[in-house]
Image 1 (spheres, rainbow over the protein chains, first blue to last red):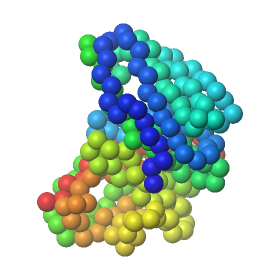
Image 2: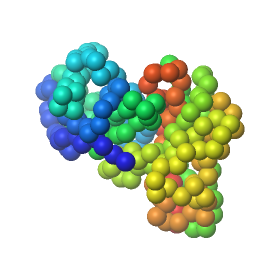
Image 3: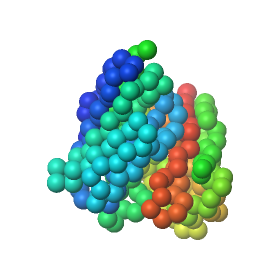
Image 4: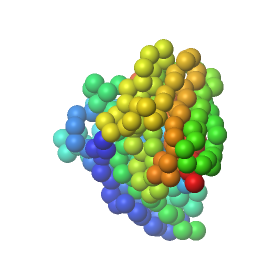
Length: 112
Length: 115
């Protein structure tokens, strides 16, 4: 079952702008991960944030986690046309091991 | 980095036939693999957890006799869609877990079209 909700469902921005996507979940988690999916392709892992972490950076990506609100955000700075893709958050719980539950995803379009 | 190979990348079959999809971990051993299904513009829905050397664990609502999973080795899991129907047309994705607490690695998916 899907426990994650993401907003917005779709986001269209211009190159150079920042893109922020949000994810909410319902149950306690061990980790929250963000993945990217190009159309018709598999998922590429972007970043993992543990439940005891609040913020994490990787290149142009910044992820925050607020376990009190059961929410996370993914910020992509200085976006590029090549960032156009669907972005999913995924959570794993204390008893689920590697079994991930995915959010509904955000379709990001970066216009050149 | 770790690579998961999924084959075929796309397949078209006729109703009533069976289709086998392979998922291989190329440079690591995966005791656990996961099979997902994704409809257009939707998220991934976990179908089953494939465990090497034992029976797969299916999610609620997924017919185990229709979606046969075999995980015969530490590097290969297969999903067979039996007696395929047009409503089985979808994008099927596998993933594999390497080391404990490491991110999952995903195959590139298989686009199944049943005519």
